[in-house]
Amino acid sequence: MPSFLFGKQCLSPKNKKYLLIFVICLFFIQPAWNWFYPYGEVTMIDVGQGDSILIDLPQRKGTYLIDTGGTLEFNEEQWKRRAKPYEVGRDVVVPYLKGKGVTMIDKLILTHGDMDHIGGALAVLQEIKVRQILLPDVTQSSQMEQAIIKEAKLQEIPVVFVSNGYKWGSDEGSFYILAPEQSFEGERNSGSVAIAAEIGGLSWFFGGDLDQAGEERIIKKYPHLQVDVLKAGHHGSRTSSAGSFIHQLRPKIALISARENNRFGHPHQEVLTLLGDQKTMIYRTDKSGAITYRFYHTEGTFIPYLP
Image (cartoon, rainbow, N blue to C red; front, side, top):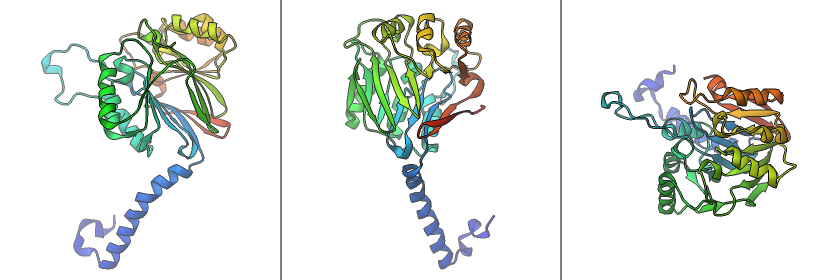
């Protein structure tokens, strides 16, 4: 360890100058590297029992966060509660984003109002600049969604309520909203924002906690829809991933976000068997930690990170 780090009496004016130049270079090199970095990434962040997916297109041509995870609260005796409770947004998602050099999110896409998908959104909004928030076009918002809308108004962040037909894209990726229908009325999971995307040479389906009824509506409306990568609905619950849906989409890869040894039994064996029968490669956060697809143009590799 250099001795000048332990006492300013060892720092000559010349060394101080070099140290200052070094710090300034570090400050500017990281953002510059992010802008010129030729690879893109799609990462299912390990947020335990919840969902959070970061899509970072090459050269920062688009940075999108689908859901933020969130801490599910269960009734506990007072003595068991922490003085500063663990919060996924603050303790996992924000550090991950900052570690990746993400200082701006172009679209924060919140698929539906359940806490395990959007509970970390306020922490993200407090720490990372967000250009736009997308929420499902439903007739009744959850309390958490209302809190996010209020915070967005304070920060003057545009909020768009999206439904089938909304789209955006660039040369590096295209995104098309398949669901919900406009002014959706019904069960919250069934009204999840569902996205078909083309990223890194693969076709993707991101569907929040879309249930089997929602899946049936999609394959009826899009009878030729097939994808390479499926983000399994509702953490691999048997209430999602219907046989008809899987048989039509024929995914080569399935991503499942679930907490290790979770109390809900996710992912369900029926879903795993159904995917296995389709010879679908399954990546699970409870087994592999975060999972990243890193790509260059139309070629890429899936990389699991052990916890």
